[in-house]
Image (cartoon, rainbow, N blue to C red):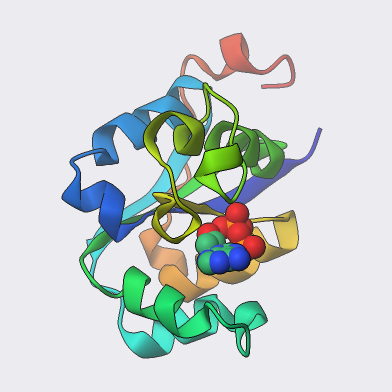
Amino acid sequence: MATERTLVLVKPDAMQRGLAGTILQRLENRGLRLIGLKLMQVETDLARRHYAEHEGKPFFAGLVEYITSSPIIAAVFEGDSATGAVRNSVGSTNPSQAAAGTIRGDFGLEVGRNLVHASDSPESGERETALFFTPEELVAWSRDTDRWISEDA
Ligand code: DAT
Ligand code: MG
């Protein structure tokens, strides 16, 4: 399996509702390794670049307004097949259709307040990580538990 890096954003609604720790804990509990973490206010320019693929869609302006409306936590998780694992834990884009047991399915109701962002491919993970973090801000480390999480560690 390939080691991947994937960007997670704890969005403003999750921050306002005090769910940051719960969300990060669920991903950490899967065995994914945190290699980058910061509390930040996203400015409009970064929001537009992050969501560039959605420019022109009817929800784009609201999406930019939402993601810039309050501080967020940006996190990078690393691990074998990290992208798919995080997306599965996050759940479907619209929380009203997300499976119970997922973050969106357990804590959300509406697509415009879906609590968390997760990269949709390894390539997006690299692109988005570079948007939110400098290389110096990412920490390479190994854990004593890695061999209990991955056969290949
Ligand atoms: P995801 O965040 O699951 O990767 P996406 O990349 O398709 O979903 O869309 C990015 C965000 O845009 C999503 O988290 C919420 C918002 N969004 C997507 N589709 C929407 C819609 N039909 N109406 C309102 N907001 C939407
Ligand atoms: Mg997406």
